[in-house]
Amino acid sequence: MPTSPRTDTSDNTRRTPMLEKGFGLDQRLRPDDMTSFLTPEADLFSVWHLGIPDADTSAWTLMIGGAVTHQLTFSLDDLRALPQTEIISVHECAGSPLLPAIPQRRMGNVRWGGVRLSDLLDLAGVEEGAAYVISTGIDEGVYDRTYHERYEKDLPLHKALDGTALVALTVNGAALPVLRGGPVRLVVPGYYGTNSTKWLTSLTLSHRRSTGAFTTKYYMDPPEDGSTEATPVWELAPNSCLVAPVDGDVHVGKPVDIWGWAWASEPVTGVDVSVDGGHTWAPAELAPRIGHGWQKFTLSWTPPSVGEHILACRATTGSGATQPSTPRRNRIHQRLVFVTQERP
Ligand SMILES: Nc1nc2c(c(=O)[nH]1)N[C@H]1C(S)=C(S)[C@@H](COP(=O)(O)O)O[C@H]1N2
Ligand SMILES: [Mo]
Image (cartoon, rainbow, N blue to C red; front, side, top):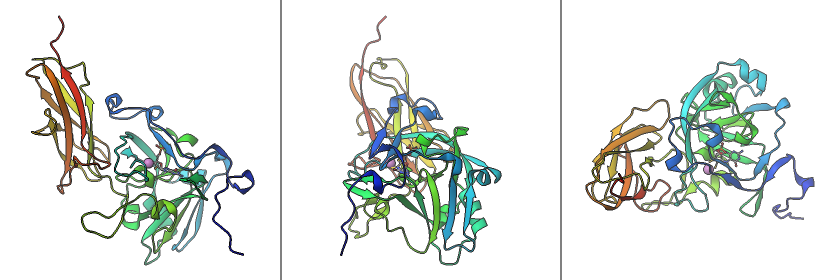
């Protein structure tokens, strides 16, 4: 008898006890609140598709298998005993895979710590022909009216080996809380958050991409520019946000710093700022990149007259990639401010 796809959520089908069931998110800061270079963990957004597992952190193991010469299983103590490294990295959600062109501005900048994925893969020995690292978390549940038995993502092997991808155990120096994907999660600097699998239990070397829903149906951008190929949501497209000023803080004849953050998978080499809704642009001062962190840009502006002004910022990278004004997840960020006379 053929069986139909499971869409039920009855408790006897669950492997993993869940603290929370189904899709949810927690968006704590708006761009104008993102005033610090490092985002405190408590202020960082969170997204979960299938729920939040009640992870038993005492007996956690991470298995590395597939196209490797030695299949290995690591306990948390094994992972802690390996050389640890830290990287500052932008953490950005690509937005809903059901509405991929809508900017959500869920991002932050944090310091992740843990074991380099490349070190673990060296220990396991990657076989010739392996091209992807497939990562799976223990969460399971219903997303988009379909039951998913795991959250599974993939990375091209070259990215897994570039020395930045981490099997992370800490965030901003503290142990990863379960709500943040602890005790162990993948972190892929320069890639959208969707690739950083939380509650990580296995890494599988494969010749082919994952066939799971989160790499085939979701987080594949539709073809563009005459192409017929959908593209995986991997590298961070150039993006930037305005932190200050906000409406109410801008006065005629008084210089004000227009500033914010810019980032991309590659370093941002220029940020332009507009005070007239994108008709004209001027280059801002730009800080160099530290690790994969976001870069501060600043432009001083002396508003000449009372009235509405639309501020905007636009990041460009060395390869010439920039932000569009059309509906895309990295659409140019704008903010309306009304310039007033300063009250005495
Ligand atoms: N296991 C698992 N990992 C996951 C997800 C998930 O639903 N399950 N969501 C992904 C998405 S879309 C994002 S943006 C980030 C969010 O990480 P955070 O909750 O720590 O901010 O986790 C990614 N890793
Ligand atoms: Mo996301």
